[in-house]
Length: 315
Image 1 (cartoon, rainbow, N blue to C red):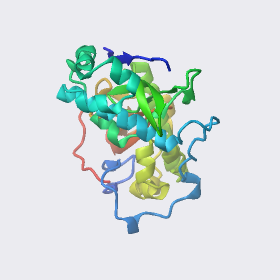
Image 2: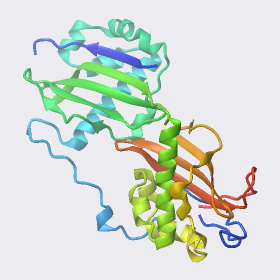
Image 3: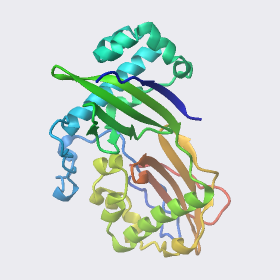
Image 4: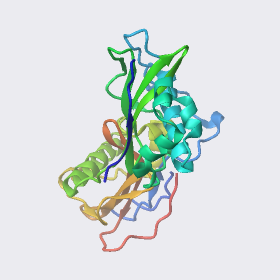
């Protein structure tokens, strides 16, 4: 179901506890997932290669800086969200452009957004996020600042198109179009391909004792929390015992159930039946611009069985 609110008016203007080898005693579950940030002194020195990309530079000098525009968009949508929840657009009305304010009063806005308000949509989660602006913002022929994009929320994505009119030194809202669109869960085939990609990358990391590519392909949250050396330390039992996971590439996983959401995360769990043991996994992902990105990785080995062994969580 697509929930939408639109007001378009334009006027003049880890660590694993070790058991035995992968093919013998089980290696108990090792979990790597961002949690509370460790103390600053315990963080490894940042790798210059992992530095944040430079702030986009727009070619049109009339446009706000990317950081300022992102803040403006978030501020506008949170003001709209607050008005919708309170069912009172008085304060929101004070923030919009003069043409829009003269065209529609607070009561008119309440009536215009009534279908959206009745759905009890909550946009509060965008407060700590940076919007993805796509396509890039532009100044249209009427001099309006037009910006579209989305917030990487889940299990529903917040999409928007906002238009602003320059009044004195401020950009003020003249049009708002907001959609809250549920993110579809992967199909069975997509889930198999996603699990295979992650677990094959994990198998390669274990074989080569190099977890940098696995971390580089993970979510921003994961990369911010863990350096490759920390992930390697958590999975050292797999490396030291030379657990052979190479058959993952040609073995279909046995999932515990269909893909599911747990809060913001999409979850895949199950096992790969390999020669002499099972590789049991729980993989959690967040939606990013490039698709599903790993945010939690839990892997253990177990003797082939129909039930999961007793485990503990680390990391």
